[in-house]
Image 1 (tube, rainbow over the protein chains, first blue to last red):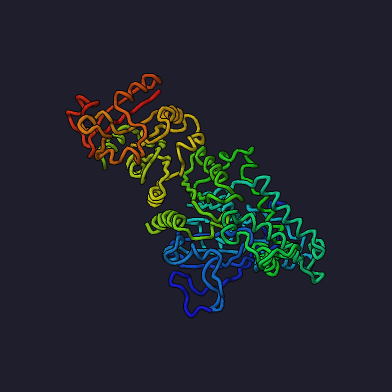
Image 2 (cartoon, rainbow over the protein chains, first blue to last red):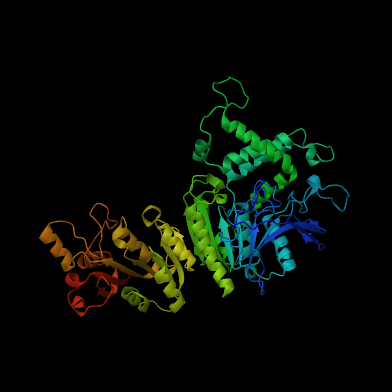
Length: 382
Length: 197
């Protein structure tokens, strides 16, 4: 337990639940009659509400992006390295909003919520939500908070897709989109990994066609496997090699199939912890949202044509060893932005940690991000 | 504002769409955005320069001309393609010139003139590769791998059917000197060319 909070932390924070009574029609055709979003905010909204920054979360996302919920909390929010006083998203200048998306399992309406039509948990009946749906719900959140236009919408990975979608769905309501370690659409390989993860969950005997709650069961093994596969793709060979090498838990081979290598026990541990805290239906839904994202689809697969809708400026960042969403995917996005004559800056950050690098504060990453955001802050104060 | 950049500015019409190859810290692009309402991008590989560009609101793209080329830009998608003090550092200056005029209606190029009299004198007197304010490197660590003279550059343009619209010279402090205009190949330190097909 820390005695005091770090000076560059946003400090103790509390989530709040906002209820939205109006129905939301989703891309799949179904509607949510009403819904809740759990939100955290950091910093102060200025008088003309021009300094708001929306943080969009990645796959296993959470509204707790920065600071601590209590003095007992061991780890701060998931993006604490980038949000706080003096950090790239400087809370001395910005009012930062972070939420748990629809379909999530940290308090926002999702598969574990009660379906008003049936009086029981949605479970597998919770409609598939898309990135576009999330952006729609986030626009209503902005309305509720009195934010007409975001100074910036920022996200990594799946969060980057939301930032990109914001620029297309609500071009007048966003001044800057920061798209980090992301892609304009998944490759077949990406979708394949997602399918393995989903199959691991749905083939768990405790899955019960998604109605595991009603059976007082949790498809733990499936969730654990899904997370293990995911985890491998978020790291790089080099970072795994550096962290674990071929190190054994004990001195000699045992010629069996228990976790003998350190990397095996690490993956099992991570998988198990994840399976205790994350909802299986939410995992299915989030990976599906990833698969479906493809803003070019409606424009005859012409991404540049799609991007002509956008009015904001873009910052695109990629990481050299990210093989889940490679720098080439970011460059594809940048190329389309150039063809559409949008304002865009791009940098490829050299970092050894694979896709997860977007969560790790390497000096060049922080410098670049800080420089860009400081300029966004100057516009706000002007 | 450096004199060479001032000259370049005069050659660029308002609201031009500009690509700056090797844009450095974005000084020129920032100036063109402000004074000429120009749009466009800078290409750069130096991380510190990229950061500076982003901080001042210049759209900068990390891209290595030599390794990645310019295939991500469409034909005739810019009014002007700039390259200041970088031609001599690329692997194939001739290919880059072609690419510049594929992407833009016009190109503006500046480079150090290797036939400048002081460099000639340095080489003649010492028999060693010249070093100067414009070329402050040893032969083995210099990024300038394709040094040329006014005459060389013009010969290349002639061979490629590239038209020279304007040509001027400045000294190492980027000042005009009346005498260097009289005899540029001998007295000009930095060459500034405006070219088109």
